[in-house]
Structure formats: structure tokens, C-alpha cells
Image 1 (cartoon, rainbow, N blue to C red):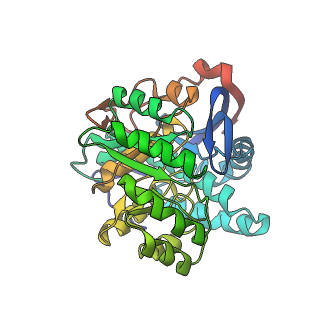
Image 2: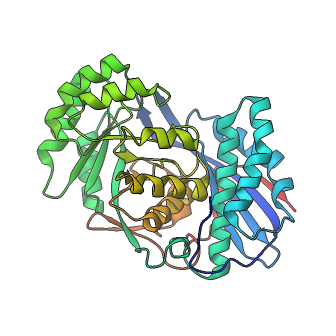
Length: 386
């Protein structure tokens, strides 16, 4: 993909790479229909060039819990030799070369997800670095006049305490709320009915089934969900189901369909444009900034809405927010409402909420630096490469 930037990108050479892993136990786990997360982890990748400019990326990993430590080791084994000392004239072209080189390892190891994840984290860091070198925010590097605020919604509402959590999120400034479902009609309908009962003008209610049902189950469940006036239903079936399965589900839906976080490969997103209303690629899973911007633009060209998926740490959240601002459209930013001290430490209050919008930090790149020493209590490992 070719990305035309608003400021010329002068060639640079990475000279150092740091990969940090942090993990924090949480007293309130994240509960989904496919499993429970009792801790939160983040893998932060920092790339510094020969002039001292730097950029941050985040390597995706939230479930199962072992993915973060493993992907950090994989990144440390694979990425430094592909990055340090290489001249980068075009971040998109550079990451395409990295992905091409990793392809053999991906096939040999039968690990498309981990290899895509480490490349996506590197892509984020390179784009952040390029924007800092240009002295502009990432969103403004990608699109002139990109807004500094984007609509946002509170995500990841657990099956217990959901109604109280919505009230807490509303008080923080959210005007959209996404409830996790797939726990049985009594729990699902009880939560949705309680949230809907208390909703105020201009608010939106979303539901995420986390791939819980078969096609037949989804078609049946959709009938009962129609009464809740959902702004979308997300991933009612497994993401890798064939087109005929998705068509059957879409035909049964009175509400919009959202999906994308678990699609694999650009071709799958193009195919899904037939049935998906809200396209949700994850900046940590597929192509980083380069890949997600391409998907966003294709979605918008086909009349779909781009809504970045993200349920991990602060660096990926800021990349997602900048991507949404740069892409445009009527999409909303996913912001995890669950306990995550690592995300909060990284952000350090840099994203504020006002009237349902996330106000993005100024400055260059994604707008933050990270004091990793202040996160020592959660440190798992730190690798440095030169």
C-alpha cells in the first residue's frame, strides 16, 4: 500500500530497539464468553533512530495470557536484524518488506497470528517515529485537517455489574456502551434491558457475542435481541466461518452487523464488505497503521463504517484513535472500560473524555512518551538491541 503523507518523510535508520513486557494482576477480571482474563499485559516496542528520535508500538496479546511473553520473545528474535541499520524512506514499503521476510517463518512455524502481531507492533513504532521526526501528530501526518477528537464508547462490559458500570462510564463522559453477551438469555437480556431502561438521549447500546454461537444459534438469538435497539451486534459467529454462514446471519439481522478483529488477511476484509456494516480491524493484529488504514479506506469507499477494535494497552489505543481520526467517517473509538493499571500508567491521563468524544493528545507522533521505570512493579522483561 502507498500512503501519501502531509509532510515529506526524510530517510532515517533505526539504531536501537527496546521490547518491554509488563503484566499486572487485576481484582476484577475481564469476562468473555470464550474465557476470563485475570491479569492484563502489554508488550511495548520502542524504536530509536540514529538522530535520537523514537517511536512506540504495541504488540497485541490479551488472551490467552501466555501470548504476550511469547510474542515479545519472538519479536526479539526476529525483528532487530530486519530493522536496525536499515534505511527507511517509506514506512509502508518498509513494513511490506518485513512481512515478506517473515512469511517463510510464518509458514514454517504455522504461526500466522504471532508473526502478524510482531510486524504490526513494529509498523506502529515506525509510523510514530516518522511522525515525530516530521514534528506532527500521527493523524495529521496521515491526513491534513484530521480532527483532534473522535467519538468513543465504553467497551468490555462484564456480565456482572454491567448496569452499575454503565452509570460509572456515563459519569466519565461516555455516551456509548458495549455489553458482552453469550452467557445465556437470562443474563444477556437482563443486562441489555437494564442498560436500555436507564439510557439517555443521544446514547448508543452495542452488544458483542465474542463468536459464541453457531449459525443456527445466532439466527435464533437475534430474534430475542431485536427489542433492545442495538446500534450493532458484533461477532455473533466465529470469524472464520464461510461466506454462506455470514450471509445467513446477516439476512436474519434487524440491527447492523460488526466484525473484523479476528479476520485474517486483507482479502478476508474485502470479502466481508458484503455483509459487515461496521468494519473493525485491530491495529495490533493486522498490519499495524499501514494495514488498518488500507482496510479503513476500502471500507469507507464501499459505504461501510470503520471502527477500530482495541482491547489492550495505551499505545495501541492511541494508534487506533489516530487511525480513526485520519481515516474519517462516522466511526467510534473502542475504549476498554475494565481495570487495566498498565494502560492507565502508559496514558497518564493523555486521553480525556468530553460529551462522548475522546480528546486526543497534541504533540508529535501519538503524543506521549512512556516512563518505563515508573512501571517497574509490573515488569516481566526488557530486551535491548543495537
